[in-house]
Amino acid sequence: MEARSWRVLVTGAGGFFGRRIVGHLLERGHRVHAHYRTLESDAAVPVARLHVQAGNLCAGLDLPEGLDLVIHAAAAGQLGLGTADCLTDNLDTTRAVLAAVLSRRVPRLLFLSSMAAIGYGDGPVVDETSGVVNPHAYGMAKRLCECLFEDSAEHLQTLILRLPNVLGRGCREHFVSEVFKRLRRHQPVTAFNPDRPFNSIIHVDDLCRFVGSVIDQGWSKTELLCLGSAEPLTIAAVIDRLAQSCASCSPVTWASAPRPSYLISTRRAEAGYGYRPEPVAVALDRYTQEELTIPIYTDGLGR
Image (cartoon, rainbow, N blue to C red):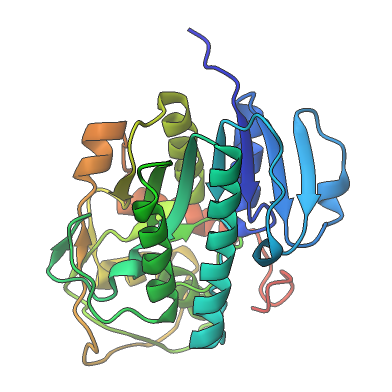
């Protein structure tokens, strides 16, 4: 049976997640309204079933009539962004999106959150019930945004996806991408917890496929899901695999860990929504093969 075509609005359409989700939804035959902070040149190219709008979300969001779903992918988490700005920008943006969605009575919303919302986590294995332990500003902002949607559960069905490190060509500002950037330049790497298992990654293509799948399935309540990979590797094995992919000569120093590490349990996403995590090694290899097509220092990403 052919999947239904939905009418979906995506915030943060110019970002790493949003841009790829928009393309994936169009490939699946959905009608997409893509919201950009500013109108980009490639966003102005006419595409069938794509409607483009731009503006500062903090000033409000003008939603078209008849939407089936909003995907809230816009976020402020750039390196160097101060605590106050990070909290304010994310909360104000999310409040504006939530107000618009409730006003238009859009039935469902999908929110891209982060595993950073739980900070260090409260144990060696974390899931949707884990407590919050000392999160940084971005994590605090994401957790507070989750609370806004949880408080609105009576009026809006929100699926909250807590994302780990999301890999893909051009990804930035997380553990794997920053380590691989240094390895490619043969620069020293300092890391922690070498013997601890690690599965805090997902490839952006797998994220997009899962988003497409849950849209087709639908959901009937506000729920939180943690995403990660299968078949964990130790952190030492992760760095070694990254180094081998680019024949790196970088020395690696193992420092005293400032915090514990954790594994992510994806059982709820697997049992309830058919999430099928790929092995850590597969996600890493796909990422490095893609990233090695970008010349060092000339990729436009400040590397």
